[in-house]
Image (cartoon, rainbow, N blue to C red; front, side, top):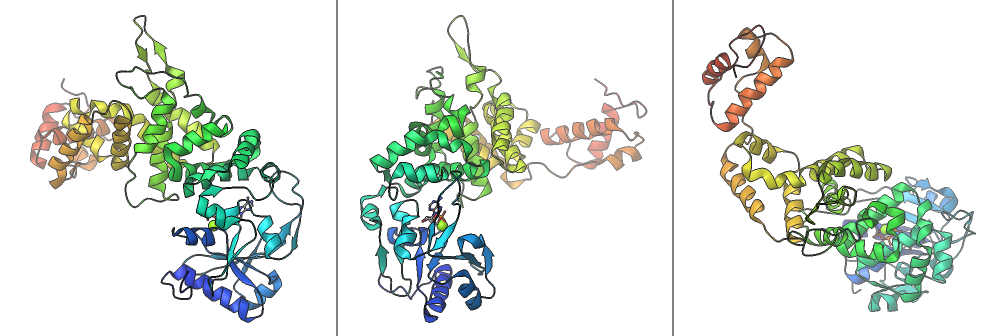
Length: 460
Ligand code: ATP
Ligand code: MG
């Protein structure tokens, strides 16, 4: 690192200023964790965390705005415009009692603080004012070799904190690293321990594994033996064979992991972005009900009737259990519901097609469809048809302003009530089909179609 003080990154500059204040008061203050790792790898840094010899009380004096979070762990959070900065006192973690958190902590020094961290590449320190790196755990060598290795005895570290097992898979795919053999053996042997990790934490790690790892992430979860504990419905996709004309690639699991590999995420995308999450989860779960709906005709033909509709309910159950926000669960469900229907769009009447094209998340529907085709038969005709229709409709609103509203119908003598909704829908259908273009035509059309204002019965 040549000129560490010169930075155009406002978050790094903010962390640097905090470190400078701590150092000027006589404390040690070093960048740690992902900021050092990603900085050395030349990757964008998610958050700048500092470790310091200052106790939380000493930190609080220098930074009155600091908020003590987890005071017993010695962590202060400093609110800054470009993102919070975490300042943690060097510490030893005491005994882990419940596979989750230490029973107590004691303040310590950088070499001991490094030992409590999870992986060697996450255990590096950097003085942000000089760029000097302190490596007490062999992290620099593992960064060069692109290896994810637990600090100390992998099994002991995973038994202390079961979340680390999922973090191993997540960092492997996030960094594109191999997992060092002893660490990988421990991941596989202790995989069942993730069962008692909280749903929210499992969700957050899974979302990152899908985002950074795509199909590789899914295959790594499978190879680690983690799927039965985090996504049993996806484990069940293995060995579920499909008609080879449509699915030359293989079984439902193979197809699903290829869809994840192929999907093109609309820009801008990020692990924490809602559109990104919705699309990745829809890719993961679009065929989740294939195992349950699979039937074989007497002539040997394999079918998965209703797997789209059943998949909506099955995915909702899975995602709600993972505490995904309800709104996102619904959006994933809408993508799954439409993933078969989309093949029928060339046969749709204009009104139905326009409504299909006007629906929320259309770009995500198209992205899922493209990946679904690319990961199977490779026929993109439907996609081309829909793109062409969108082009044709581009200069007019897909759903134009209504020609008539409920009040208009009542002025025409029709009675308020649910029948008005059906009449308005008829007007909109005819408008979308191009049969009604003006308000006057709509009035004449309604009178002809619904001649009896009292009991609104359509004419045919
Ligand atoms: P990113 O922010 O890109 O996800 P990170 O390495 O900064 O990566 P964080 O979860 O922000 O990861 O944690 C910061 C650092 O704290 C880690 O690099 C690691 O040194 C330590 N750490 C975090 N969680 C654990 C854990 N469960 N066990 C041991 N050390 C951990
Ligand atoms: Mg971090």
